[in-house]
Length: 485
Image (cartoon, rainbow, N blue to C red; front, side, top):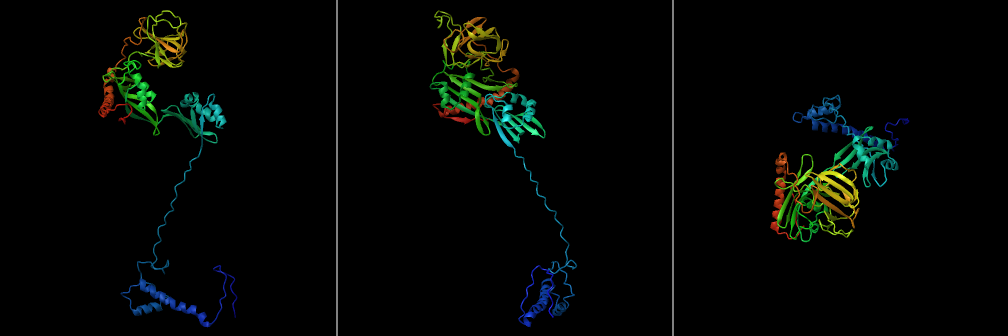
């Protein structure tokens, strides 16, 4: 009687009806199983058992009692072991799962650069770029940000990061050396002025004059700024209009200013020497404890005088000091008690020395005029200005070199120039030839520090000069070296 197949499928595979060709074919699997089991047991015993103590009878007994006999103990783990066998080993210590490092996702903000144009205000620019006006008001109220954000000029730029208009940071470069940095911290803002990572590199150059100082400087690749500083340092001893001769030479050590590994501009002169008609003049920079810098010779005497010979950057002297000069407008003999320096309208006019403004007005012949009172009963006069310097008035104190007005053609004149007078005890003296009082030397309390800081600079300049002389350089600009910081 044939059984019906069970409807339960333990392996989830449909039952396959196999054909039964003969009885031998049907018994073959059972025969194979009956022979295979003892063979497997013998193989296991031979692999795990102690072959030195077992004999044929033991093997036969083991085979006959395979269902009840346990295998000998061994250090290896048998593939037939169960949790209840003597061969069972202790479970391994569970290893806790390794937690991956948390992934920190930085917020991504938009960056907007606001460039100031003429007539722009921050309020207008913030509204134009949909930036928070409330945040602007909070930032502008911070002490460190008030002035930098109040005074803005065309060309100034502000870099702002924001989240849909909400300000996260604001940056403005105030100068080559300082940056305003505003950042958001939670719901508040902080502002500070930080120093920019400026690097100073010292360079030494040599120039020989064949035509003029400016041509020599151009040949050696010096900027106009460095050339003007050289002339300014030695202006008290050398008249760069009338005293320069072919063959004069100069050596200058100055600073280059670098930012983010890129040269930005030339800085101050550190040390210099000028050889004029065989006479050598040296100057080395010294920075005072209050931050001001000045130039002195090797002995500590100031290279400048108490007064400038020419208080303006002029093109030429249009009229010398002359008591018997014929006036160009009145056509009469009328003393010219000063020196006229021809220059373009708007050229800055500097105070010839430290002093106080005692006159600042418009006079008939002089036009717009300023008179300064100096120590030693000396006064200086500056006439024909186009405009006065803003922010100054009668009684204001000024320092030598500070701008007090601008070249013009006001008053009784034929062209733009500065008329400059020098008076001692009320008597007019020739500004170009009058003996000028010496400026103060290094103070005794600073002399040791001055000598310590100036000695290596002057030594480096001397070594460079000797190098140039040995190389017999015949024209400017062929050699330049980096000097030690």
